[in-house]
Image (cartoon, rainbow, N blue to C red; front, side, top):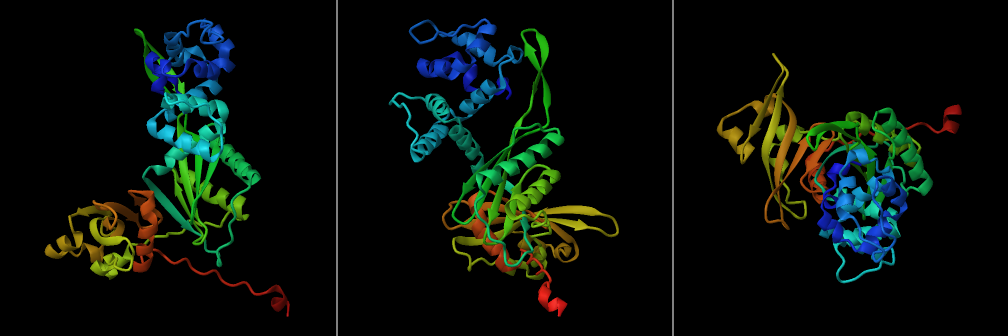
Length: 396
């Protein structure tokens, strides 16, 4: 972890806000390391004074050579030492029946340190779960197998095997090791959060009047969502190679089939050309009041390849007013819709790309919008595989 990115551990006053007993217990496993850096920790709060300024200097100095375990712990506690992080940790601790030493004067950092001392895996899991609530762009892959193969939650062994294969790939791709997979079952879908490293970074820093280099490996979270009833895998990841590995390894470890999700196109924008305004009808989708086309990216392949982006408050009205033939003649690559939900004061947007990409403002919007997309024909129905004749019939 990059020590210079620690927010709460960069200020002596914030360190003082952590109960001294907890802070010393948190740092105790690395007492010898601090001693090597000429910082002596008292055994108890009454046995001496904690050198808060010295601790900050070590935490913020890349040259201190602090062990990776300590840096990882500092990073996780730092990230969860917020009011919303505290709420998540307290709720998770109660659900896990994890006994905590609590008081009315606990700060968010107190709670984060306490949970770390009691169950570091719970802190890691809750930290990872904070990444699930951010808006994302998903690529969606459907299985061609009919019926959809049954799915059961992965065992601990299957999860470890997936982590091992992902770890090998990330290491070969210059992203380091340490991959973790967290599983979050939900009502009609299962979320998988993959924590992994990114390519190494070297950045210049200023140490007094001298320049120095800070080296670190950034942390990244990818999200996979599996819909068991539809046999669909949704992937939020940065590179095409990562998405391909997720499709292949998810199918291998949970279904025994590397090719379960072939990667064919899920979305088409043809209904905008064929149905025009009728493609925006949503009266048969509960909770959706209206849908407006706001933006379309057109692609012209002849006589020269060109791309045009048209935007308007109501794009169908704009195209009709200008008597434009773009919708009928050009290829449609991307469309942005404005969606007014019944339970929202303001409309939200969704972006659909011809192929596999859907970008929702909120993850929770996906279920209702996928229903609309399917009803209006924006979702391609996978071809049914050819039936293989029964072996006994074939021999006859």
